Length: 92
Image (cartoon, rainbow, N blue to C red; front, side, top):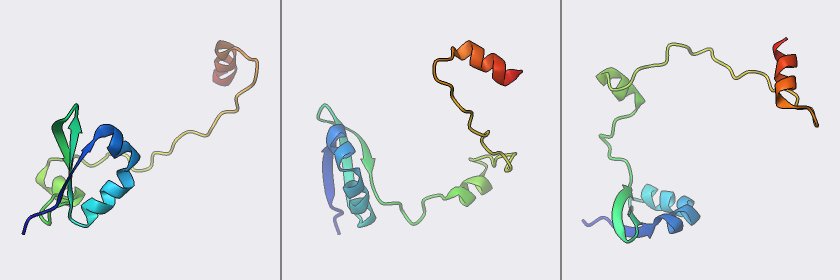
């Protein structure tokens, strides 16, 4: 059985990425071109494709050491204040 192949330039792919992903889910491969030359492909994952757990077990991926990291709280921005003065005030 032959897998359907679609060819798409970068610009076309950007405009139609959700459709390309849907086609990949359905089993279709999309060859991505730059200046008419094939450079990459978007295709469905193989059953044997490594997931994160397999990559960790194989040592190809290192698990994060910290799992409790949270982004800092947002800082209010004042209108008309120079950034060096605002930073000085925030830092104390």
